[in-house]
Image 1 (tube, rainbow, N blue to C red):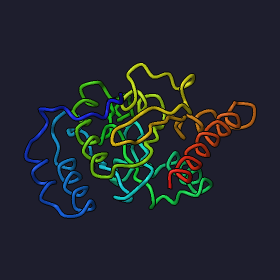
Image 2: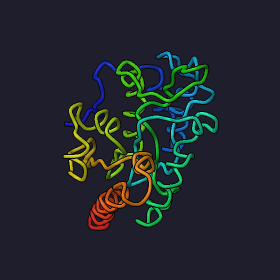
Image 3: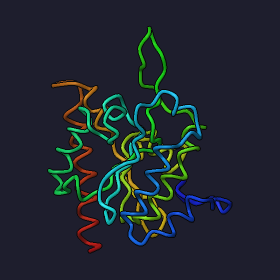
Image 4: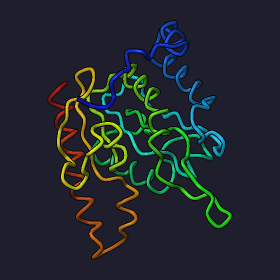
Length: 223
């Protein structure tokens, strides 16, 4: 069972507001409004913009990363830096226009810390991930995608299983909520960090491409 399950005690004014909206687009925007105003963990103190996510409310494919970086924090949009550029190329090659999918993260604000007088990205802490998970759960409930693709180990650990091993388990199917299927692959930023020829980046790109073809074929067969 995935970690995207609703806590039975989780019903609050946000759920009531969402229930009053008539379209998935309106429901997602209601959730996004709460995310932008959220102060449930300390990340709100350093954010410039929360990053709720963006894309189609009827997406068959939902993409979940770890969290916003500096570019995303500035623009309030997910995957708009160099890793986002590579993701766009991957999606286009697999015939998934960016506007046809929904892209978000397990945490909606940039996780960072002060190092030598500058804010540097860091991995989100468990309390931060836990505080944000209800928002992700609600987004999944509204969209009900056929496939949820986790980019990188932190996203897979936050969505699929806390003990997920990205090297050994990427490309494997797992059961998700609402009949969805979960799968993970390497994060575009990880590929970029590996650099050029002889670094293993080519092999990583092939593995990611294999995973994207698996997703494309599954969605084509599922109709």
